Structures are given as C-alpha cells and as structure tokens.
Image (cartoon, rainbow, N blue to C red; front, top):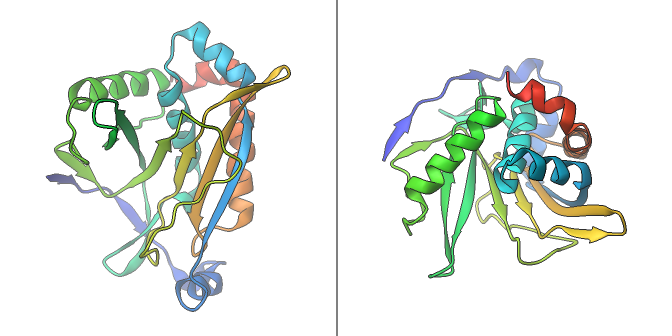
Length: 225
C-alpha cells in the first residue's frame, strides 16, 4: 500500500517540561490512561438531524478538531526520536453486517466539516463493501483511532494493546447513546499513552468536546471556513 509521508517537528527533550515524565512512562512505569465519560449530545444531536449531517462522521470530525489543536495527541516515535505530526487524521471502523466483521478506514481532515462529511461519504461508498481490514490503498502514519459500538451503552471500556511502548495515537470508542430525562447521553471511552499525556490533557479534551457539542450552532459556521 502506498504511504503518504507526513510532516513533523522533532521534540527537543532537553527543553520539554515532561521530559522526566516521558522517560518514566517509557521505562519501568509503562502505562496508558483509560477514561470513560458520558457526553451530553442533546443540542448536538438536534443540530445533526436539522442540518442533515451524519452522526458518526460528525463525532469523528469534532474529535479530529480537538486532537489537531493539542500537540500531546499528535506525538509519535519517528526514526527513534519523539516527534509531533503537523496534522493528524482519523482512522475509524466501519461494520459489515453480512460477515459481522469490520474494516478500518481513514479520511482526510482539513478543518471544514462539510468537506469531511463529503470525504467520509466518498470513502465509505468506495470501500464500504471491501471486507479487508485495511481496504484503502493509501496508508498514513499520522492517524488516531475511532471505533463505535452502537449496539450497547457502557460505563467502562478498555482496549489492551500488547506492545504499547511507542503506541502514542489516541483511541476513542463511542457507545450507544440514550435518553436520560431531557438529556441524550453518549458513552465515550478515551485511551492515551501516559508517556505523552496526563489526566489533565484527557480532561481538557473531554471538556472541550462537551463545549463544542453545546455550542455547535455557532461553531458550525466556523467549521465551514
């Protein structure tokens, strides 16, 4: 498969505030951070239905917006050094009903929600019937991961990565949303590597995602630019 070579910036560890933390969590204290939250999507879901957007790519877009805003979610090991990708794109799962299997696709993210809805639709239309794990010919290194389990809600979710030492890409899992009184709640599991992220960074991501969901009417105009 063809690879697109992304741009990146090496991290100057000698000047990085988390240098010691990075070394600790790369050696004897290797660990990931896993947190499951309930996202209030009441306003967001209403806007999605009124605008004609699709739910899954909208959530993927919002997550892409946040991870591209913060360097800690764009880190990787490249040529044996820590780097920050200039940008990062979503790799997400699509389900095949006939075989009860899934494939992993990625779509280009450029910050425009209409562009992303279209690119997502084009990718799913083109590759949606291909049962390969990676059906898309072109691959990318600078991706993060999104999956969905829309058949069930959950209060906790954990993915165990066997060799996680240099696996720094964030992983997000969406559950089945449900109504709770007047609110619509979506389970969201977040997994990051402790070498490059702390609980503070996960909390900021979740809070920013909630703020965007609550303010989607105003932000939708910004996302179009």
